[in-house]
Length: 432
Image (cartoon, rainbow, N blue to C red; front, side):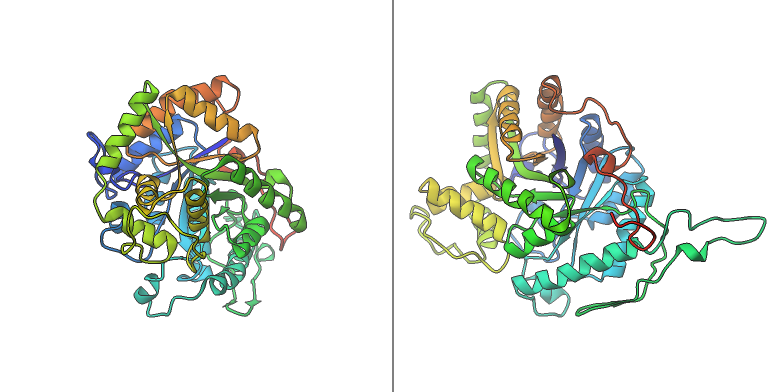
């Protein structure tokens, strides 16, 4: 199985930073370097940093106070050797040329370990920071389809061996191995090429996390990693099949895309100790913080509802379908109240929470992996560094002993870790 770690410096639990001994800042390079070293010790495929473009008071602390993620990953490239480095960058509030150049630069700096999470920015507040009206859900995905194609095209404008640096002749670049993109589309006109040579990976890995119909279509056509929001095994199996069944339409096979659901493991020496940890974390939740996040996930203000009322059937919002669909489905399935759903959101921001001994955590991950519900997992430690250390030191060895997880890296690039070939440029030979 493949493993990534989703890093929020104050912990993925909204109040994780309050746990005794937990890190309380997302502005510490040393702290993030420590997390990266732990991930590399655990032979993780990927360290991932999300991003957002609007601050909302009362939201998750690491959503309010954090570095721009690609800058952070460039620093981590110097202190890691094998770990994949992934970050979110918006297709709604950026330009393809800039994004292509940023991730190509990161790929060179890291020796072929960069990954771009192409998101459409679900938060409507971002528009005000760019002097724009936030587009609707489907409109954002129409832009994203072309945006991703332009970025991939720019990565392909340089062929391997274009930089020759011939001291005898004085020729630095073989012009026959560099082409303009000359893209003219509905949303973008981009000449190219960009000022970065062919990436060590050929192209950086593309991540997608959309679960709406347009999001799944984009993922099936372009992504190599897909993040998902799950709460139930049977629904996860259906989602897994739904994604994999789309791939042949685009000439792709099931092994071309790794589906990694997000999961927060709370680990104890006994199940009772793990539950006590989770109860302690839940006890730190403020009266409004989880409600603010739940409102964001559902695209509506839920603070006016009676916390002890059952969650009714609600339409999917125009923001993020994945979180809303998973959470509302769980609420219906388990007859949850608004208080229940708020507590769930505060724990893992709407992601799946599992609690127990290292053996029980490993059992659950193995069950999902072997049931074709996941190709691995995006691990969301509730707080850092201790809870992540526990996963790497206690759960990973069990997975290794069972033959489910690598004991060491067998390659140096993220594509190596994922078992993906290095793609050729579509402009210079066979398409990948």
